[in-house]
Image 1 (cartoon, one colour):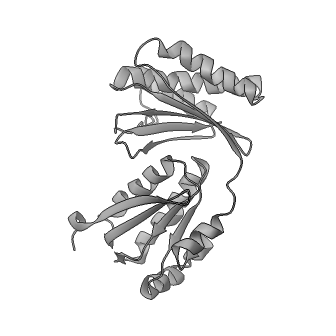
Image 2: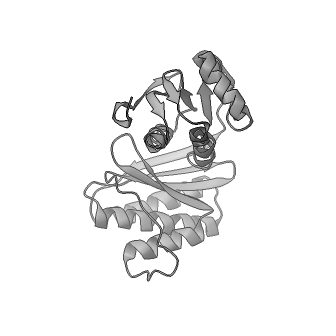
Length: 245
């Protein structure tokens, strides 16, 4: 079976996103499964559950995918990753890798769902903006209003507004569709995320690069103001750029 035969598909189950893959997990397919898991997480489900019973594992090194993704989505959007392996062979490979130390492993889907527990409390607000200059005052007002409702300190509110304005500006200047802003308060963390229809990921500039464009200036500022930021693909074919304050 070649990389072209590898596919991943997903469905919702009791508030979780279940991702199943068919084919061989190796260096050629690692990135495709990673993107599928990150896309599923971007829907902000109760958890992302990976059904591993349809895949072959050519090398245990490829299993590093799951701890890596678990760490990534734990920060944003803050959802857990769980693995399901009813197949004894797959389950044995995971045991040899000591996967349970990094990501919970379950024998069945319902067992994985039952182990999720109650989701952590989070406050979320989201708004679709127009594709034009009118979106800037709307974005400013939206983020400010929700930070005030959640009693966010003035300094963090200022940072959130600056990040939102930079991300919205990049979207308006460099994509064709209208942006969507999502703000969230969870476990003492404030996050700002902007969705757009362009699949090209946002990238920080390399050290020593002259930050001569607005995008580079914006991402440099976001790096300075946030604990962590990233760019993730979405199921719609676009991306979400997020920052945790």
